Image (cartoon, rainbow, N blue to C red; front, side):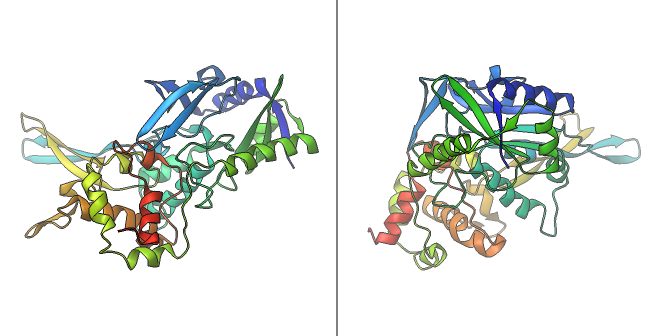
Length: 369
């Protein structure tokens, strides 16, 4: 069963979630982009803004309505809240007769993710597989994951680099949410069709004014999602893609992309599923204190594959891009039983030179040399 809440119901949802102890994080306009940050009400959302995206290009532009979620996705993904870019693991202090190690206490807040898209929910599920379901569980991720409330929004507009439909990851959220909304702006009427995915979602919905959705209202919401699916800016043929990449490790296309790739690592930083990290030890100048810190890392750095003896195992841009794309679309399937790509398109938009994973895959599939 679906329900309807009106425009003011979004603020009611914010108040209910806040009263239940959740800190709200959601999309907001800052520095010329739509990013995720703390919000308090719908006034903080990108009201009346949308984004235009292409390979290596992103800009905001005003919409001709007052939609709250009328954009695709920005450079941020939710992983920064579950897998922080920098996290102190432990500290050590020198004492008169040695040193003592102090375990770092992590107590992340209860977060309500406002406006999570279907591709991002798929990304969270993939990170769950990596960080929760193997032998080594990440304790910070586990704690934060257990404290989430996910308010999803079905996409009403595809970006120029979106291809989630190809990856079966959107634009409709099918799982992984507590409450999912579809925004409908039709003339003077502005409302949301709501679906609860968990008991927590039902409880929150019941705490705000709502009504049972009529067939016409549901039909309008379904039409919004259908139009989005048909307007994807990109597509990716995933037919036997694992074998395609395994069989083409020496394809000359890798040399061509290497001539453009800067190995800056932007694609891995904005990717919602990339999870590589490293650890470093930092010692105070006085030598009395030290700490071990975990930070995001990237397979595009020279040091990432460095081993004692031979040095970096992937010393060229060609080898690093091939590693990233082949892992994302092929070996990830062997490791985790799923593709590592959700089709959000961030790696295309935020690549400084506009390298396009869908274009590279098509070139290899088509035999372009």
